[in-house]
Image 1 (cartoon, rainbow, N blue to C red):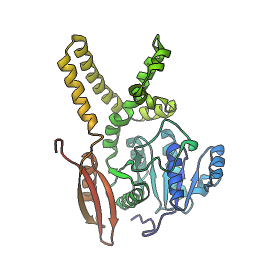
Image 2 (spheres, rainbow, N blue to C red; image 1 turned 135 degrees about the vertical axis):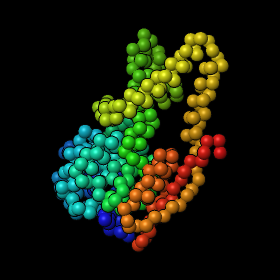
Image 3 (tube, one colour; image 1 turned 60 degrees about the horizontal axis):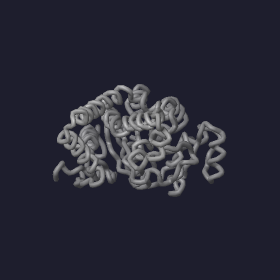
Image 4 (cartoon, one colour; image 1 turned 90 degrees about the vertical axis):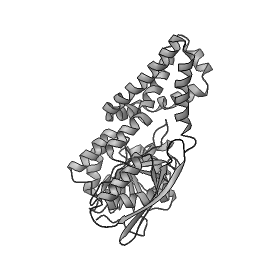
Length: 342
């Protein structure tokens, strides 16, 4: 059973201090947590020290004796980072990551018997900028933060991490299977990067490109914002979830074809109906309605029922607002979306 100094703030480390990792580091530092950072880039380490952060010269020094480590950095580097951190930390140190895809890394960790202490994670926040200079301690405030709970000995690590993320980041913890996460973010996050790139790219090729950009207002700016994300970062994300992204892109293309067909036919009723249906879904983002449910489970045992319920919460669009562990019971506060039309 993983125990991260129950009742005390963990000694933490952040490996990889780019936009997300740097923001995690700044938040923990600002909250008074004993936290060390490390980045493979010497210039970044020097910059971090200039901001008053504790950043040793080596990864091993940064994570030695830590209770919790956030593994950050580019997606392709995460498997190696996870192995290096696992080898350099005590067996009871909880590990998590912030990568934008979960299936491959979770499978990698399972093959190496790390799911007893590794909790795959993904905070749903970011910016088109990159690097520690762009990081802020508030970037992840109130973010939906996916965590992938594993039944068995890994569940206590999930509980501890959930409590910390809610307490220090105000996170809305979304428990999901890695497969459900990758399926959902394909449409919620990854396809929008393709669409933003397509719109900005089409503008670049337009005969009146400069005039288009001069007239671009909110819809174009909002629709193309993430096209300014570093291209390599976007490519890593898309390739890491390629099959699901292509599947969801086909659905978007089909809807776009329906819109185009209605426009081509001059069918105002059909065009209006399709736009209205899309607008109604978009409107749900600005008026979420949730009902609260509290569930408790035995602290011991194999946690199968607990993990099944947690995954159901995430798959239903819900999130956790609290996790409290007592000697023999664990209690969760879940917020579940009201049924459509409620």
